[in-house]
Amino acid sequence: MILKILTTIMPWPIRRFLLQKFFGFEIHSTARIGLSWVFPKKLIMEAQTRIDHFTVAVNLDLIHLDTNATIGRKNWITGFPTQTDSLHFQHQLDRKAELLLGESSAITKNHHIDCTNSIKIGKFSTIAGYNSQFLTHSINVLKNIQDSAPIHIGDYTFVGTNSIILNGACLPSFSVLGAKSLLNKKFETQWTLYGGVPAKALSDIPKTAKYFLRDEGFVN
Image 1 (tube, helix red, strand yellow):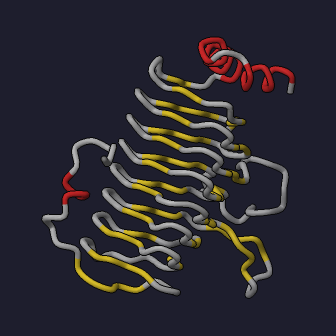
Image 2 (cartoon, rainbow, N blue to C red; image 1 turned 45 degrees about the horizontal axis):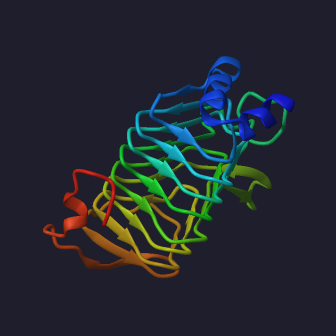
């Protein structure tokens, strides 16, 4: 615990050294973690990645940020590690408690992300605004057990503020999920605006929309 505290408050070059030496994290020389409590079993941060201040990320097997991916401030990222003695999720031998962010993807700030099962966010995608929830587990009332399923957010997607994404859901690439929506199923049609409670296809998105043609993550 003392070592974890030191790797949170020391100057970044020292923290990076300690995180790599004592925790086995893989952190590129251009990557950076702010004043945050980030301790999955394994952390991989590629070039130019960033985790900002006051984010908590614990009880995961893996967090992997691809090149230029970012996690903003005050995010709460939790999971339920595999290979434990707990009775929870013993029926899911292939479960992975992980968060995977694609190249130039971004999670903004103040979101709650439950990685009891895998959450994959594709390249050039944005989890925008505030207060969205990604929930990969829940109680299966038919079987009376804790159950989980992955969430997949495709490439070049935009998730609007204050949305809820439930276990097993999929937002296809080149799509938008409108603000305050509930995504509770797998969709497949790309170039589509989805929204509502529960979410449904609302309209087509023109393939000339510039957000989906970016070659860098930053949006002016």
